[in-house]
Image (tube, rainbow, N blue to C red; front, side, top):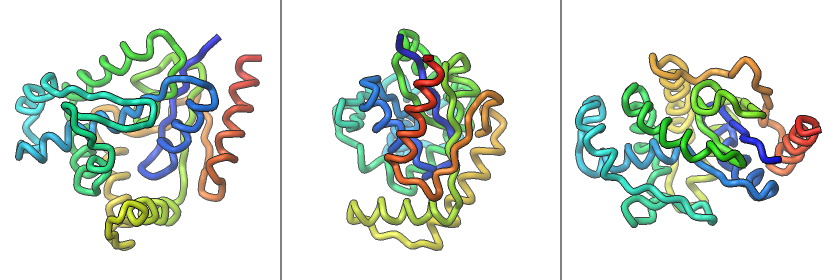
Length: 219
């Protein structure tokens, strides 16, 4: 029997990397909800729309065609934006856009419809608390700001993007504050979520631990 797995946590805690590998191991579908907000942010920036104008954003969102393939590529209106939406400016814009209640409601409904048949690994910042409240397994990944900054630097350098440690560090702290203090669906650990500190664990160790948790839940 397939279950739904909700993974939440702050920026660069390893959510997407862990979720993708976990989905592959389980042969589940993976849905990067953060990428959906990033797509909206990317289009808003490209179209020079004000990020604080919820009405204009809501008018734009239904026109967006977002697709995810089995290789974890993200397409927006037919364009591969996998790397483009990981830009630091887009990350901060996505955090700002996610504060709009109606924008979140639109995307959350879309996510819930996708996962209703079970067999999904979904990661984001309000999956266990809002999107998949009935998920059979909820996880909350954390890591130190220092470790998360190092991970972000490595990610950017691997893609040939120049990055400054101090700027990344400050942006992560700023985004944590935005995500945890927004009025709509703030980032928090669900009451029934299991917290995992990934600061000193590699991807395989985290995935192995989660697979053991799943085995116990199913048992």
